[in-house]
Length: 69
Image (cartoon, rainbow, N blue to C red):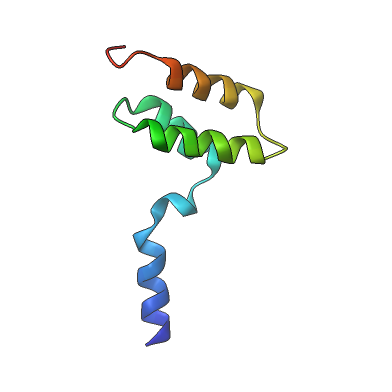
């Protein structure tokens, strides 16, 4: 019984299985990503000392992009 609860828990949150880089890439490409999600990703990126500067620039550009772009 415990194993079934654990397995269903891992399928509920697929974003936790992907890397931060993959999550940022998907958020930058998806124009419908809410700004709150982008800001959470930026916070996680700032907390990661080994983060790639290019990811930071891409995410900042996406946060500052107009909605019609």
